[in-house]
Image 1 (tube, one colour):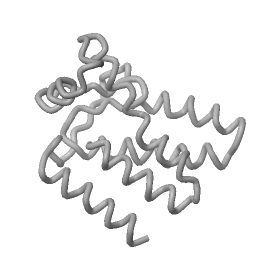
Image 2 (cartoon, helix red, strand yellow; image 1 turned 180 degrees about the vertical axis):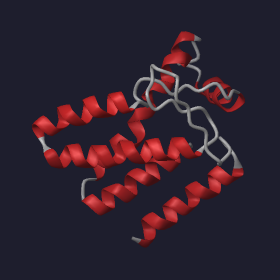
Image 3 (tube, rainbow, N blue to C red; image 1 turned 45 degrees about the vertical axis):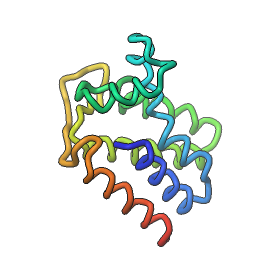
Image 4 (spheres, rainbow, N blue to C red; image 1 turned 90 degrees about the vertical axis):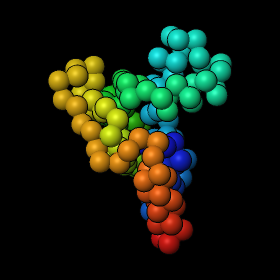
Length: 143
């Protein structure tokens, strides 16, 4: 899903919980693991080529942070310090997982074990995904 869709989900959660920074970070920062394969292929400092590579391949770059294992560890650590932050972070990560599960790119929720894969019904980098993202922003402005 577009990063802008994850941002919209973070904004919605931030508005509902009153904790924008935690909601936005948790909804968007999970995609940092997308940088791992780009760093290996030396595209990390070439953002236009990196974006082009992401659009052209259906090979999933979702890895360690896109896992319910990472989710459980991160939320458990945060809960030690603050239940409220852990809850908001949890909602942000779950929104990210949901949005990634409904696009048609590979999503392995138990990564690094790739026995279970989900693929959704919205085309990755498609017009439908753009429209869906647009509606997320409409929801944000309505609430």
